Picture 1: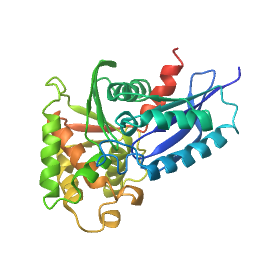
Picture 2: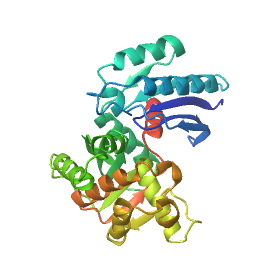
Picture 3: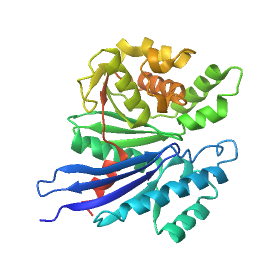
Length: 300
């Protein structure tokens, strides 16, 4: 049997990623190629009524052109391309989608926050040992949650809370932290009351960055990220240090260099959501939306 090979392109507000998956006869999923570029498609958009800015569009085009050339090197049966918050919020999204279709022959499907949450939950249910919990995926433009009970996706919810969005809206404010927290609290007020679980499953860059930092903080770098667990209460002070620190986050709090510019906003969102859903423990996931897109495509 020839392994089935598919490419997934994930166009986020912050990063654009390409992953090429292969599934063998035992239904085991493996990554045969992976790359990402910090395109910042949402940069400048949140202060411009959502409109994608020319510089960001140019960066995205160049990255997708490179991805297109990479895909041609593999025996791909299907390319699945999805776009999330920055593009779905953009009044000029159709122009961008048509440009990419015409020039690069890539068909972009814009998904809403509920679908984004569902894809992440599909990956978790299939590829992580968890029965019940709430997945939390903090992106550049939105935070998407899925409620899982007995390995079934019960409900999804999306919040306009993203790292790039908050950075652009509040980073120049004199009362940046206070205003950001108020904005987060107002958004979280809309979260349905049944979104309460002991376990939070961390999906996406912010959650992974924090889990990696905690692993280094614990001096347990032999531990793998996928399935790594930590107690929320034990690390509330650690999160607060990241949010309030004016010191070297990379060397003192183990934050990776490529996340330094948005980790404060991401950590503030993360800590606030954990409190709101009354999570006691975090389970880290190395899989998310892209794996969910692939897995769902195998059932259609």
